[in-house]
Every structure is written in structure tokens, then in C-alpha cells.
Length: 172
Image 1: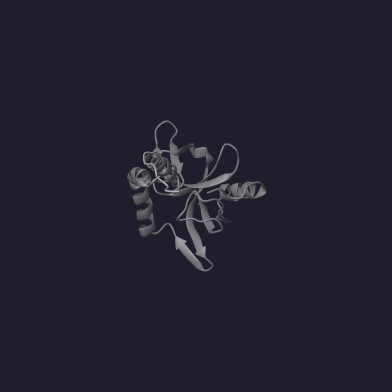
Image 2 (image 1 turned 90 degrees about the vertical axis):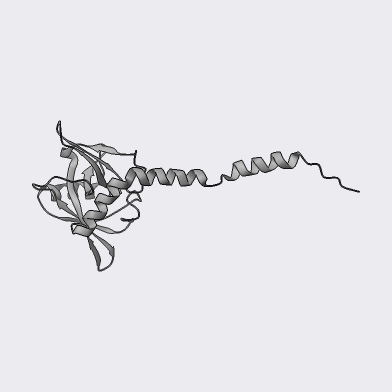
């Protein structure tokens, strides 16, 4: 889920580093179905707390834009890194994020005007942990379902082979 690039990213970076909350629109589909493009995110600075598995963090990518993805694994030793990915991505598509690139944590999102979802409450935290724990199983199940789906091209080729074995006699 990319946040708007350019001056907005620089402004957001400055606000979060100054300890202020940031409210910004989300772009992209990497965090679908929880976060959709156009929804508003409320991002809080980390201050003294560290991101935990299941949290959605906002970080700066090496190329510059701000990204909001879920923390799937923490590596506390050797300077610590966070492994993140979007909820819509396969579980093996994780990105390693160094702590100095992390700017804040998504604490709420606005689904519709006036409808706010608090991500710091216990049920939302539990769902985040559950998604993080079940990611490999869900990816495996999705892959299995894709393999069961008929492939149109393969079906057509099979039909051509079978139909060429039979000749139709036209009595004309």
C-alpha cells in the first residue's frame, strides 16, 4: 500500500519524526481487503514502543515512497529487522525493513466517512496476529485452489486432440 509520493512523503516523514500523528490517504491494493485505495489511515509515531508481529507499520522504501505493510516477523538480534508484506501478497514476498526506516504504526483507518476502525484494540490486534500466524497456511491453500482451477488453454488442447481422433462422415 503506497502512500502518495513526493512532497507529501517528506511532510509525513517530518511530522512522524516530530512525534505528531499523521492522517493520510492510502494508494494501491497490497493491503486488500483490510485497506483499500482511497481509505484514510491514521499513523502514530513509534516513540518508545517497537513494532510487533501483526502491526501495520509505515516505512520509507530505499527508492523513497512511504509504504504501509503488516509486520510478519521480527528479528531482534543484530540491529533487528522487521519482515513485512502486504496482506494481498504471497507469504514468501516479504521485505526486510531496518528499524531506522520505520516511521510509525497505523493505529486506525476510516472505512467510510464517519466509520473509524481502531487497530489498537484487542480484537483488531488478535486478527493481525492471526493473519501473521496463518499466512503460510493461507498461501498454501490459495496455491492448491489455483491448481484445481481448470486452465482454458489446456482444456481446449485436450479437446482438439480427442476430436481429431474421430472423423465425421458427411453424406453429401
